[in-house]
Image (cartoon, rainbow, N blue to C red; front, top):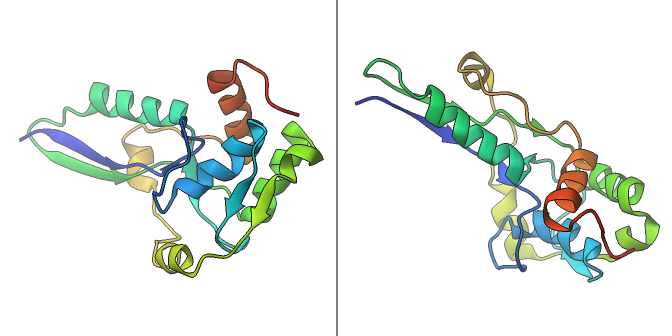
Length: 160
């Protein structure tokens, strides 16, 4: 057997409509305000998590496809993304990229069920194996993720 397995980070900002996935709010709280709609943040702003854009996720998969031949061995790697900080950092990014009016569309409504799920997620990953396998770093800031979404999904425009 020859192959490579990778663990992707949370992909943000996912295109489409809001859904009930526990991690869906990470995309919703950025995608919906940019589309002119309110979005609910169900967890504390202190939640720190790992993210990459859909563009980076495609790059990770292409790299795995093109470099997954290990001479009859299976290799695995945690994603090579960065923890992009907590909600306050994300909010500052949304304000910088899209303005205060867009950022104000995020409404904080704690949801104990979602918080319970998110609290059980790992916070730290060792990505050294991914680096050794040639995976490159995803976006460095939420600013990057927001700009990529505006470019790739919104045709360069958002609802101010």
